[in-house]
Image 1 (cartoon, one colour):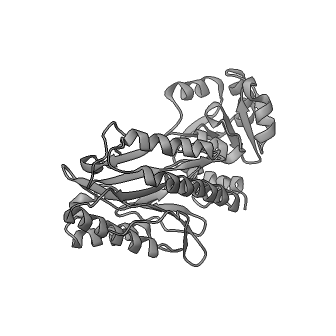
Image 2 (cartoon, rainbow, N blue to C red):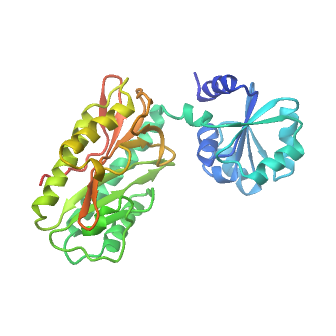
Image 3 (cartoon, one colour):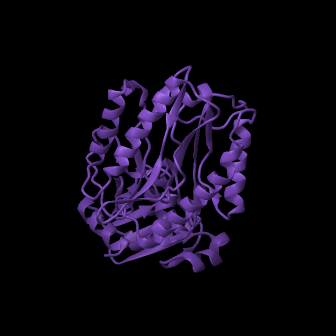
Length: 348
């Protein structure tokens, strides 16, 4: 069953005859058009159409897997109006602007129905081609991390480490997937501590979280590294997070409930007295978006399936002291899992 067939089944279950897709990642997923921020896709029971403007005429012809209409609003809406007359048309409630909704109401003789997560649902399981793009992105990140690791030492600014990682990704032909996190010393207590002018000091733990993007698909990895000799307390926290991370990765398999994986890691940290220090969920899916389904969070009923790609990233954050996060990118296979992130984790 193709992705569009799966989506039509989801549309039927949601009670809509057509779907107006405005989320850029969803536009790309359904059409192959890489400038999804400047496109829309209309999916009907018997077809799909990409709408974009004349700046992308050649690009749309080269990339799109579905027929294209090159037009700007209001011509875009007028063309689509013929396809949706009298229908129940879903729109992506979490992405379509109020102005965009008003434009549809002005031009369409159709019942407009808010929907959530229809395309995201069919994107959960990656195709072999998608997995290969993610694998390539992670291989680039692994290689760049290995090149940059020697410069993470006392006297170097966090910003300079981040710049080296970004330049390495660019030189390798990849894009920078998201803002690079480099959080050293006390700044390690900030889960999203993007690089600052702080100079790394002897005894610091330094958290590095970064990823590449290849053909639109992301990688995601975190390593916490030691500069000099960290305190006994920091080593204790590091080893507790390492234990939780490795146990959760080992439990990744088809049929595993993601909430149970979160509980496994959280329970290990609780036994080490770090329950309150684990301030976020265990992980998330990765693909065209750096954060997508499934969600590896407390209480989640999501169930892993072969072809899903997820992160496993427990952390512990101690205000005024520092923090630790370790994250691997993991592919769910038919009989277990494959860890895609190969950069070694340090043993303290």
